[in-house]
Image (cartoon, rainbow, N blue to C red; front, side, top):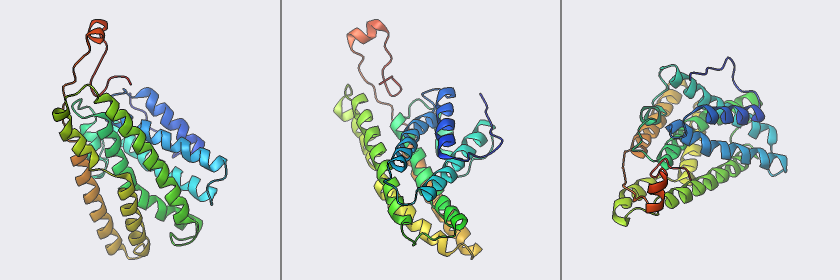
Length: 254
């Protein structure tokens, strides 16, 4: 079902509400739904950290989260309407219906696009709006805090992935483990911060800004293509599950 939004989200609560609505309307096996589930956990964690006072500048972090989420919502709306989504997100959108790609691959491909491409732009925009800079405390401190929540979500995603691979032969699963292991949210977060600083200092020099953004986009797209490489793995169906007709494989409930 196509669902376009007339206006961007305005608050953290609206971001979470909209992501829940996205999860409810998409097929659970849709590649974007796989990313949405992971990112919804992060958005909820950020809200919780703000509520308990662990964030140094709550207004900055909330606005950053809203601007970041709106980039994702724009991508989904464009994809639903059959429009271009931009090179950073194209690998995930192209592969979203490929059931040979595992949910963890989709989740990491979306995180790669959102973190490496969208986040630097969102930080720059938030700093401009709030008349601050990436170098002004506590911008980087809060950035690191949010990044730690992304790392936590990545660890949870990997744990679920390993549980689903429990029935696979070790040799058959190794190529997929190797592929998934090549992605690191922690390293992507560091690269995104470096891109943020470059884009910030080049924001008033358009040719340099555009060149840097083009390089960031190309690198993000390359990693995204790698992450959604189809690697089907046969997983034996336990006899009891086979008799019950229980679904197994990448998109089995778990």
